[in-house]
Image (cartoon, rainbow, N blue to C red; front, side, top):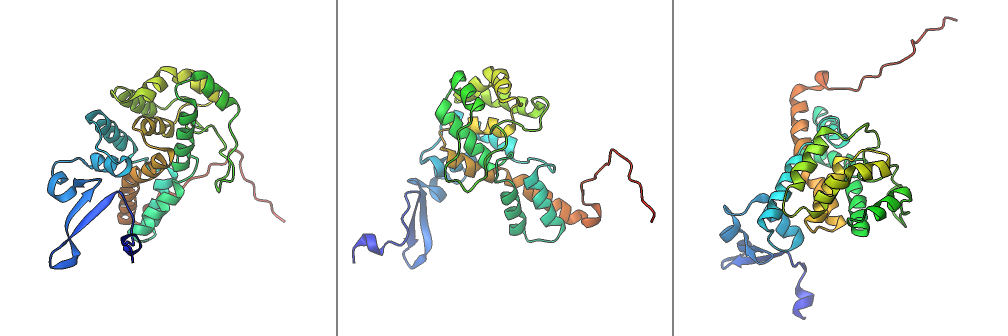
Length: 267
């Protein structure tokens, strides 16, 4: 039997060398050629490991700083976000840790501030680049998705469908990231934000900023979608644990206020 047929796992990402006396114990592990435990451990940053895993090479200092700043901005979407609230529901209901995180991933996967929205926005960056006319044409006549399991987006991806104006946190994130030397698209986005928002009829959303950052870092749309899901999990986990400790009696259920008084009819 050839070596190719004997090999059960094919990967260019990871290589392991076994211990001499135990083939199931790892003596050395290399990620894209780098010795993880012998060279990287204690020297490399977490975001450098992420970049290496996805991109296949070590990031430049500017790219590592950009990814780290983006990771801080995405770490906790907050309890009003659907993904975090889903994890909170799991936590207060006594679900396992894995179930809480899976709930967050499911609720945060779609085209409303989720991973799919980042994917679609990154596709727009790939097609339009920094051409304002191309963006305006795309926003005026969005392309139809072909053979997709996802429903059609109900708003221009990357923009806030319910926003009145660009949120302060979005503007702060964009300003910080655009100041990075690796931020070509982000700088252009900061300069043309007003024109893009006018074309979309909606303010820029954080997902739009994240998509531009992932594109500047060289990630493909599928990679940006995956990283967006991953980087938002810390907040979901922390809020799930907090609500578990609070208990269901202090859980923040949504309150509905009726504008018209409700009258009870008597027979």
